[in-house]
Length: 267
Image 1 (spheres, rainbow, N blue to C red):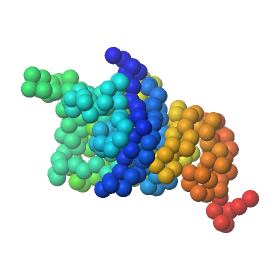
Image 2 (image 1 turned 180 degrees about the vertical axis):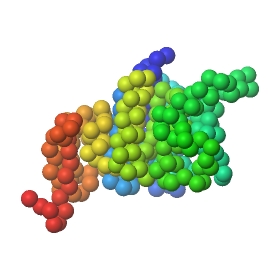
Image 3 (image 1 turned 90 degrees about the vertical axis):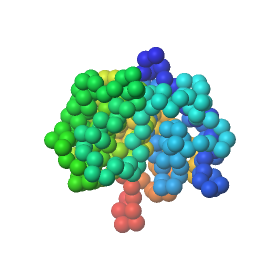
């Protein structure tokens, strides 16, 4: 099966915590081989949806399907070879070295019959170089800045070499330069390997610039989805985020550029 053949979808799923529903009856078909970005206000269900797609949260109704089968019916190791997740606040084992943490991305590809090999080391080295953390290989993760840690986690996700990658706010803790670096890196991964990318982003204009498919959520439901230029309007921004904004074409990409209007900066 090629990368673009993998299908990930949610079918009428209801999700919640402690009996409190967060997402109710939501359906989503992730476009294979494309970059999907989920946006919305805080507590709208973005991360909850991503956790369900990653098999970390079980729907109370409906199902998440991977290649047409309920993802919970698939063996864990098999799912891990297809689908990788970078959660919002990952926790590293105490005192672990950067290189050792990134090497954990190779675990789904190993077994008692196939231990860590030179091929795995080469993939880990390449992931570190790609994420710009090779010089940190022998450092303890505990000693890194927030931005450095985020790039290390991204390197681990790269080392896993899955065909579908889910990322919850991958630009957290990064300055604007490193945000662009990370998003460009994900585009490279998508273009070169055909990796299906699904990520949650807060910065709406960056989401529009980098998404092939944009999913806008509000109150636990999808209110619009499609190409950013087709769905992002001032009315949508008002519905999803509760603010007025000017939406114009981005001079760099042609995608929608969203300029929020505060009380002191209205036309």
